[in-house]
Image (cartoon, helix red, strand yellow):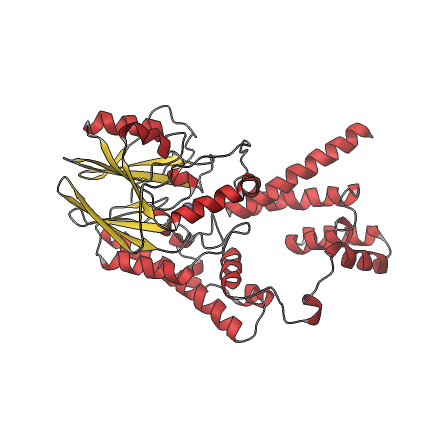
Length: 411
Ligand SMILES: [Zn+2]
C-alpha cells in the first residue's frame, strides 16, 4: 500500500506524484483539509499520450496538468470520470487546453443536472458534512464528451483501457481495468475504511451492486488497485481489502432486507443490526468517514417507506407539539436539565440530547438548555471518531457558542 499522507494542505507547494508501477502515477488530493477525506488522481502514460482517471479538484488539477506535461511530454488524450463527485472531477476544466475526450457513465449527466437543480441545498449540507466553508455561486462542471451504458473500451499507445459500470457510492461509477499493467481503478468503490454507503444528508446508495462491482474487479486478478483514498500494490492486501468490503456490504444489505421482510421498523434495525466482531474490528473497515447507522438508514431508504408500524407514526405532529406536552407534564425545566446533565455524565450523550429537546423543540433560544447542549456537543466532538457525525456535532457546537456569546454581550 502506498503510504497515505496525513495533514495534507489544500494546495500543496509542490505536487507529490508517486509511481505505482511503470507508467502509472498518482497524486493524493486533500479535499476539505481533513485526513478522513482525500481523493486520488491517477494517470497512465503511454507512448500515444496520457489517460487521466479523475482530474481531481480545482485546487490541484492545473498543477497535475503541468506535472504530466513535464514528466512525459505527452498530451492528455483522455479524461475518465470515476463518478461525478466534485472531489474527483471538479478540476476537469484545467485540462481544457489539451482537448481530451472525456468519458463517463451515462448516469453522470442526470447526476450533474440534479446537482445543478439542488445546488443551494448541496452547498448548505456540504458545509455541515465537511465543516468547510463553501462560497456561494454556481459551480459549472465539465460535462463528458462521451458516455456509455455497460462497457467501453479503447486502446492508446499499446495499452488497453476496459471501462465497466458499477453502482455503489453513486449510480454512475466507472471502473477501469488496464490488463497489460494488471491495474484496476475503482473510484470511491474502494476505500481503506468502512464504505461510504450512507450519508445522512444525501440520496441512498447501492450496497448489493457495490459488492458485485468489487467482485467483478477482484475476479480480474489485479496486481494494483487504486481506490478513492487508497493505492494497493500488494496482492494479498488487495484481496483482503476487497473481501472485507464485499462482506460488509453484503452483510448490511442482507440484514436490512431480512429485517424489513420480518416486519421490523428502522429503529429496530439500527438497534439490532450489529456488525459481526471480525468486521467491526477490521482495520480495513474503520468507521472514520461513514458509519454503520448511516449505512442502515441508506439501505432502508432504498427499500422501505417512512412508516414505523405504529399508528402514531403515520401522520406525526411536529416534534415541538409533542415536546410541549411532555414539558407541561414534567412541570419544571430544571428537572429536564438535571436529567440531561445526569445522562451526559453517564456517557449517554445521544439520550441527553434528545431529553433536552423537550425544551429546545419548543423554545430553541432557551439559554440554560443551550448551555447544557453546548457541553454535550463538546463531549461528542471530543470523542466521535467518525468524520461526518463529528462535523455535525461541531457545526451545532459552534452555533451554540455563537448564540451564548451573543446573549452574554447583550446581557
Ligand atoms: Zn465519491
